[in-house]
Length: 153
Picture 1 (cartoon, rainbow, N blue to C red):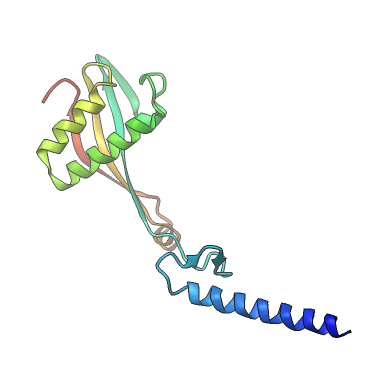
Picture 2 (cartoon, rainbow, N blue to C red):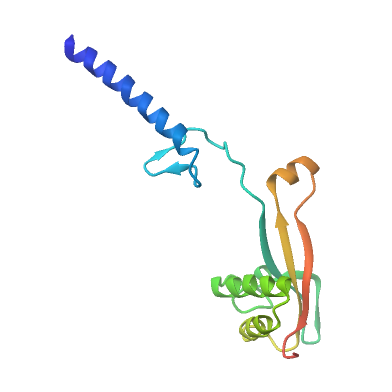
């Protein structure tokens, strides 16, 4: 009987300690400390996210109707799901947004090495915020940050 009481009190103390550590972990930047985590599932709503995409409008003399995102243009692009291309597009979009001409030239050269000649494309900024979408019932915001033709500087 004595061992049973120790087990009950020890379990209760352990759970109380775990709860206290879980609450304390909410004060950290990541809101959790491995292996102790907060028990409040979905307490934090994710922040908005900004990504960049390349919208293909024309390849050579062939128009792409409707324009397709690079990742969806498998019939036009060689490897549309390449992580390297994704990273290049993100860097190109950030450079266009900040107006850094040298970086734009460098990232365009990397991207256009994988594009067919005379490809007309837009670099599009896509911002999505789950809370804002829930409040306004509007989809993500799309904004063109650059319009280019491969092979032309």
